[in-house]
Each structure stands twice: as C-alpha cells, then as structure tokens.
Image 1 (cartoon, rainbow, N blue to C red):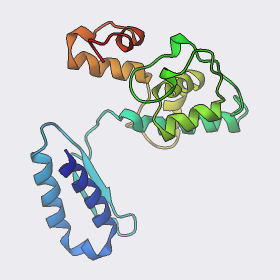
Image 2 (cartoon, helix red, strand yellow):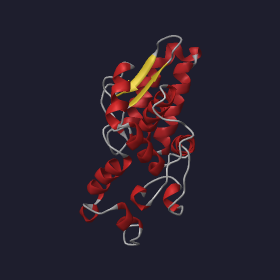
Image 3 (cartoon, rainbow, N blue to C red):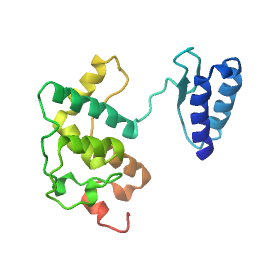
Length: 193
C-alpha cells in the first residue's frame, strides 16, 4: 500500500515537472504496474496544469469519496454563511445522538459541549472529525451541497448521506455482525473496537 501511495505522489510530482514531459509513457507504465499489484480496484489521476500532461489508471471511474467529501460540505457552510443563512459564530450543542464512529475528537468529549460552526469546520477539515461533519451536513443539507456541486460544474460527485451512513456501509461489508448496530453500541462494545 505504501509503495502505491508513494507512486501516486511521485506521479503527481513528476507530472508537475516539465523535465518529465518526454518520459510520461514510462511513468504511465509504472503507475499501471503498481496498480495491477494492488489487491483491489484503484483510481489514479495526475495532470500538469501548465502543460496538460496526464497519467492515470481508471481515471474516469467513479469511486466513493470518503473524507474528501468534507471539502464540499465546507464550501456549502461558507456559502450559507456568506448568504446569511447561518453564522460561523452560531453555537451547536453536541449530545449523545451526535456520536459517530471513525475519525475525530468530538466523540470522546462530554455531551453538552457547544462549539461554533467555525470550530466544527476546523475540526472537520483539520482532523477529519466525522461528528463535526455530520452536524454540519445536517445544518446545511445534503441536497444543498450536491446542488452547489452541480452549480460548480461537478456532475459526477454527490453528497447524499452522512459519514454515519458511509461507515455503516463499510462495516456491513466488513462483517455481518455490524449490521443494524448504532454507533453508541459499537463504540461501547469491546468486541468490535
């Protein structure tokens, strides 16, 4: 996995370097070779914005975005703030119902905490906090995030559910015992975590 990650970073860096312009076929072949050795399906794409040179494997395939979708939620939060539909200084009380699996710190904090919308955006982007993400997504609305993506010309990306749903799907694939379990149950059960 690390070799593939290094190859992807190297591909991005090398495509950005004009010195590699004549060696793009070799770079493309190496990325393809690494992708074939990966035990799954991956997508890789790198483009030099100055020259337009590209390398890729499954570059036009659709993949789940995972935490990348948090950027689109942030954009919607800032658009809503700019339009006066919310304030970045609004405070949101966090309770047990907000608990989420996965990354972040809010899940481990005591109920009753009242961070600002700005604080939640910071947690969502800086440490990929899933609880902050789902609170913000509920606040701005998934349909609104997707509509903004469409307005920006991003037709093949959608935000249609919170991280709780995304993680639930992943857990269901991982093991049938995870089906229909609440985040609170899973977090509190040492059989699972």
